[in-house]
Image 1 (cartoon, rainbow, N blue to C red):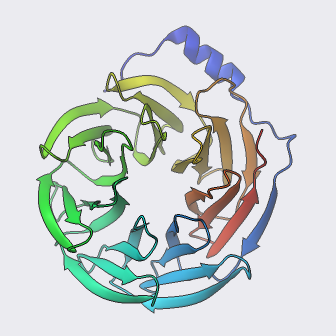
Image 2 (cartoon, one colour; image 1 turned 90 degrees about the vertical axis):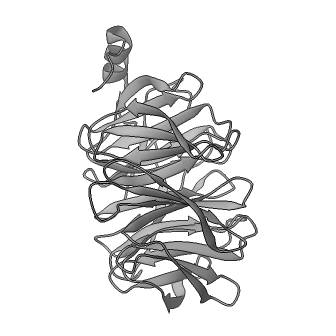
Length: 323
């Protein structure tokens, strides 16, 4: 299902993409971050960090200045993906085993609503305009779902049928097209939310998991955990432009707010690779993290990086100086 790539360009990538271990990146650690924490979200101003604790059915708030978990609340069962509203006041959490989206008032830090969606919801993203949230759902059969949620009314506006195992998603900041990782299809499906239609199905690597989009909406990066590479999608032509080898078991991805750098969490390698989003150089800068890294976020300063480590119950904080 994978498209042929330019052989010469791939050889250049394979030969040139060697981690630059000489550059030193300072890291610190916050311990005792729940049990099996798996996804994180930053407030828009970067002052607050939230994490889902899968093993304790909690949402955690982390005090970044004191480097401790400052607050925790029970939400739905088996919380996974989460997102924070544009004003930083509301959180939306996909609770897989309770089949709900928990709506959390982040000011008072309490659950104010549970949106029942059925199935097994797993990932949430909010549109750039802030009016809609998009939620992927494994479903109860082979057929997955994508829910479109009204953020203000806290209701499901519509549901679109998907293929096998829809997981992570990214929303274009320019067109609001929704790019959904289809783990069971080895594809990314592109959804037009206004038309409620699937407009493209793009073959990627094996076992795709993570996804990230550049602020200009021109490139989508997909982490393929089984083929140990990234698929780089040209959104204008709706096809994979190039495939880039990375570390072992890439999972979480993040693009810096300025759009210049891509951060790749390699779960199997227990490290993070940093690459320029334009691939102008193929020398990756790396730093190590704890066991079982999954999700990653970059602060508004474009250099402070947060990585949640599921198997270590910890958060790694890295200072990645601007180049």
